[in-house]
Length: 302
Length: 302
Image (cartoon, rainbow over all chains, first blue to last red; front, side, top):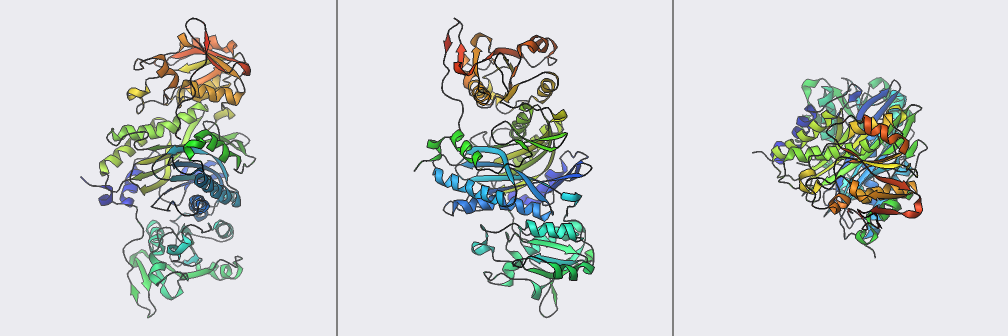
């Protein structure tokens, strides 16, 4: 009798995805950063949910507002990764009965601030009691102008870009990151972005999601990868989860224009590699020009 | 320094509802069975979420499929209470790492079966690890023909109806109830239903929600209340949560027609009282015709 740990998180998700009814309006169901639903001819909605659990994603003694901010920011980051605009949120929480009311209020204040910043209306949810703090944020967003970006559209010859610097999330970055909504809207509305994802499992693991779903390969140029000042080694940049930066591919012909017109002065934009034929798999080109195989995988819940 | 228990669940919800941004498309935010959003002229969406936690809402040794069924049915019941049609679901779960994979699969099978039965597409969600099983189901539904029923529309002179029999949920009813979607659609599409709610906190507590939000009073006729065979006393029918039956009000002029045309042979429909002026508050008329005040409140999480 297998346990979930033995089965593995992705195997489990794949197994459950198969058994789900899929109405014809569902353009993309389980398996991307958000689901895509075509409600009317010109109305595409995006749906995503992220659950945060005390002692897994945060500690009770961390600043309550930061916990709340993060809970909303994680789901916002998924909407960003689709190139969408966030609209409505449902927030389900469980709090210990003996929790100080000020902590619960602080968490909500953080959620409300983050929501307001990005035009998100919190319209409902559920409240419960439990031994640990649990927060599940589900967001409904819109793909304005019918434009949304899946993980599965990368093409051979595309260049791979990343926003920000990677590997710094271990040291404080976890709670106070800013979802890249404006950056993603800029990209999706002006450039032929073929594939996009937000980095939550780690650069290598999330790039693997893109090439697997696009049925392509990829080479990452080690010397180009922007390493966060807090990161100890390049390995942190490769394998640390929760950077919440955008990882995306555009055709080479758009790359120079994009680099030139990138308007976000405080957010670094870096070309870190290229999409190849599927046969190559995922490889890192090191400083000596040698192709090496990356380590197995990023973060898994079980 | 207050704890959440001292503050109270409804006080907490009211406090957080105040701080939330409300886009002009939000017709009804926090405070009803589901939120209502007007996306386009003829397109109204409903949003609701329900979180179930091991040892609060179910036990690990209960049949996994029943746990899954219940998780989805709770949110479906909220869509029913609005008179809506369920469309899309996001399901976030947390499972212990050492949980038997067969239990997790069973839970999903139960969720999928319940979803299919009511035309609901499960399109995404999140998976996590935790010490206890946690399931949060958020559903997006549609108010077909712009028709939806809030808690706040009850009018003086309305008759109060309830589906099914009450107070049986303590004994097995908790897990295997059927959300009253068809019944609610029938009601919302054919009758001037002024207010509706699904009974989750208990008849008295949920009727209190209706009269509070409608700024009215109500009298419940004790001898008319349909008591479940499993219930021990009338008190169970009044105060037991999780019946998941519909509680609604219609004008007296529609009542006879409704009783006559009610097409659901297996689901009892009973008139149990009337809406009055606000001054009366909430009263129970006992078998001797005496008005008495009901006990304080139904189920609270904290």
